[in-house]
Length: 156
Image (cartoon, rainbow, N blue to C red):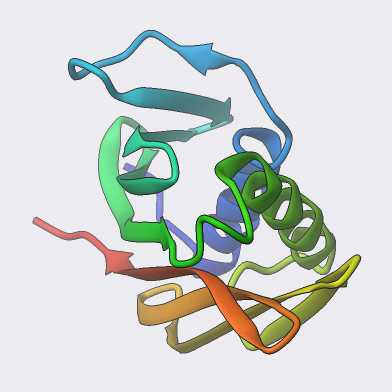
């Protein structure tokens, strides 16, 4: 197996995230009943994002390097104020905010982005090797959506 460089892994994770959910890439066949699965491949890397639910959802992203799992992230998100925002609106805000973040070549680090009268905020600790964080959307002063995530490198 070739040596895995963290910079290459970071670049791939950003590419994969931009090409799948944010880029509204094609869904793949579900590997588990009722899951929504998205895949991306480039060179020695493969990516699978598999999640359940809609307005309240849980999922996991896994990166494989030369066929071996090397990195993963788990996440759980939910709409806190369904009378103020629905899952389609959350999806639109997330896609715009995350697209802008990925254009910076990263997916971690403090980030804030406004979309209309909504504000997307992401705060986290750590780096690609081990991290945890949360993102949320404010509508005015009210938190209407929140997601928690954590992940890092996988080794045998």
